[in-house]
Image (cartoon, rainbow over all chains, first blue to last red; front, side, top):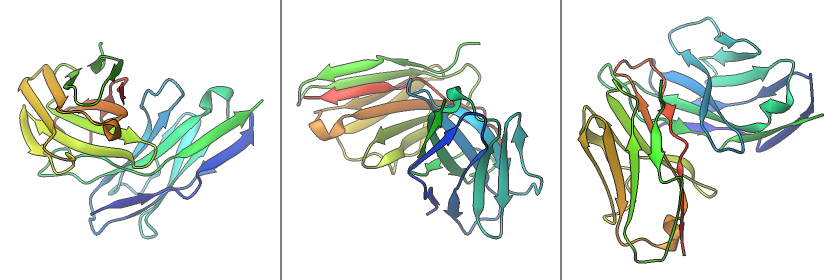
Length: 117
Length: 114
């Protein structure tokens, strides 16, 4: 079974700073997908970014980027120029494809990110 | 386009009552997932369907929980009888058939069992 570990229960940074959230995972699979989801106080689960394990290039989405280290089984999220609206819980998630299709997500415990004005 | 729609948004009921949570996936999505979120256990997969067929129900806590998907546009998660430890936020998510497509979540149902 896969496990996902987020070692930072809470982080706090000033607005406009850059912050990195860490995530490590354990799997024996070679093909898989990794995701970061954001959950603001409204409790919506919003996809931030995703990475396919067979792609060496790190994914980026505007101010969000990842540092994917497959050998180290590490998948950190970097948020540049942080904004007050980035305050939320952030969850790292793992998915192993099943028969060419989807499978359930395995989530980490989450990191509560607070952006201070 | 409409996202995943869950109802009710909040449910408060007494122990022993039957609870039914509902989900309408995004049109055209082949997969539907039910997750539960608690402070103690975080987010955990309960069950998922592919083309209306249950594929993996290993996360369903016990026989009190059941899920159905009678057609491509509707699913239910039922708890009977409910217990206080079932209190949680229950999320439904859906995704297209291709493995690389992400899951889209509904807004969740906050369930409180008194």
